[in-house]
Image (cartoon, rainbow, N blue to C red; front, top):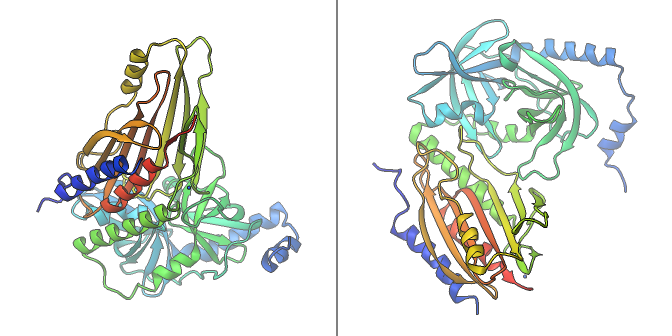
Length: 446
C-alpha cells in the first residue's frame, strides 16, 4: 500500500485550476472579580515563597513521573519528558510531543516511566490531542492520587510553579509568575515567567494552592524565563475520553491526520475570506492577516547597490509538532520587493528569477513526498506574474499536504517582487483554495 506518492491527477488538476482561475478572474476599565481579588492579596516574601515551593513539591511528588522513550531494544533513552496523574487507575497526562514518536513509529520506539522513588514500568498511550499538545497514558502498575485541576483560568500576576524532570537531574520545582493567557497565540496558552527546561514537558503547572493550572509545554531557548503552559481545561476534555480503548496504529495515524486537518482548517478560516494588503513600491501585497501572525520588515537602503531590496516576512504562531522536522499547521509568507535605477531590464529580470530558489526548502524526504508543481503566467490585479503552485503529501498521514506558492512579477523593467507562501499540514482542496485567495490579493497600484 503506497501512501507516500506525489499528489494524484485530481490534486494536479486542482493546482492547474487555481492558476487558471486567477488568470481568468483578473480582468476587499473594570477588572474581573478574580483578578481584582488577586491584586488585593499581599505579595509573599522570598522565604515564604520558597517554603510554599517545598510544600507543593512534597505534595505532588508521588503523582509526577518521568516518561522515557527508547529506540528498539536499547537501554539508553532516546528522549524523555514528564507526566502527572490526572485520573484514577493509573491515567496520566503528558505532552503529545513527548509520546509522538511512539504513536507514529510504534515498531521503533517504546515508552517506560520512572517515579521519583525509582519505580519503573511500561507506558501505553491511551488518547491524544495533537492540537493542544496533550496525551493520556497508562502507567503499568502505578496509580497514585490524581492532582486536582483548577477549573477557572490562570490569572495574570499570581504566583505559579512548574514541576518536572529536567535534563535527568531528578524531580524539580521552579517558581515563577503566571501572566495569564497569551493574547496572540492561535491555540490557547498560559504565559509562565519561570524556568521550564528540557525534560519538564508534560509536567504540571500549579498555583499557590497546588492546583493544576496548566501542563508544561514549551520554553524559548533564546529567552530567559519565557515559557508556556497548556490550560488545564483541555486536559479535562481529554480525560473525558479516557474510558475508550487505546487506538491501534492505523487508528492513531488516522486520528492524528483528522486533528491536523481540523487545526489547519480553523487556522485558515481565522484569516478571513480576503487578505489585507500593504503597498510596496506600487504593489499591493498580503500583509498581517491576524493577531497570531507575526510580521517583520527589513531592507537594504544602501544607495551604491545596483538593486535595493525590501523584505517582509510573516509567520503564524500556529504550528503543531509531529516529530523532528515535521511541524504541520503552520503558515508563513515572504515578499522581496526589488527596485533599481542602474540595471537594464534584462539584467534586472534575470536577477529576480535567480532569487526564486528551489521547491524542496524544508522537511525530510523520509516523512514527505516530493513536491508536484504547476507553473504558468497569470494575470493578477493589473499586472502579469509567473506563479508556481506546489503540493506534496505526508507519507504517514492520509490526506495531509504541504503547500508552496511562488510568485514573480513581470510587469516592471525597474521594479518587481518575489513572493513565497508556505502552508504546512493541510487538506489539498483547502490548500488550493487559500493559494487562490493569496494570489487574488495582489494588485498593481502605483
